[in-house]
Length: 324
Ligand code: DGY
Image (tube, rainbow, N blue to C red; front, side, top):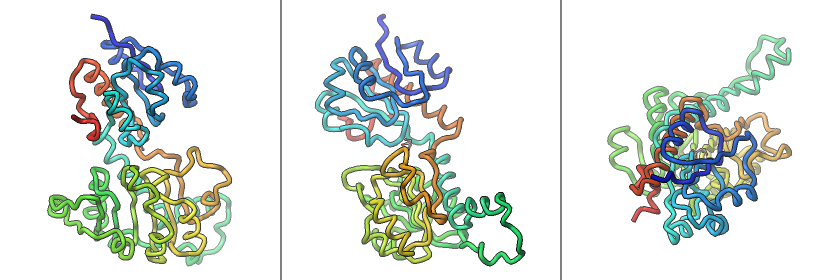
């Protein structure tokens, strides 16, 4: 049987490539630099399957790829999909849920602790030889344990964060979600709040919602103004869920205590972005799921989704908007 033609637009582990080789004929992008749009449009001309992270799958790309049957994202987020255009052309789209939940939840907790206890700021202080007096009052932070956590977006990752908060840090956990989740309230003892109530009550606000038209700019000037003065804001979703100017203004005005950010409205972030100059803001370069084990699991799952779709089956992680 003829093997389907596939393009792999991102470096993947050798074992995953070997798995794909059993089912597909493939070309691959083999650089650490992201593939350019022009190159991607060239590469998709004759393929049936595309393995990718983040590149826009829009009408322009679909026009260049008349044989395309499936786009398999190596990511849980799929805001790069133009779902309407893909639906019209019957191109399937898949993502990699579940395998990264605990890894992203760990990073979220790392950011909470780092901001609250000022770890990066104090690390610089020690390493720069500025630790000369014994009073530690200027270094005091705020507690994570027993504080109130508000999770915006109670999906699988939200639940993994809630478990850590409840069982590891004795926190009170509130959540806001498009759909109320009585089963999670029951199993984890978390409490539903409206967005406004959550922002007013939480000491830590964790934003973990997928990027959709409804969640774009969800956190704006009004939302930040509702937060407590000593509250910490964490974003590990997508940069566009936050109005970044409003976040900067809230931090500059001292409306909130600090922020931990894995994502930015522009990535890689502009080195001149004021957020990078603020000691009470801890930043990482969109690495929520970046451990070797999890990235391997994501690449393998994405490859399996791709193969299943090319075999004419419903792939296990077909995104819900494209299910018929
Ligand atoms: C995801 O899986 O969506 C991560 O944010 C990486 O893009």
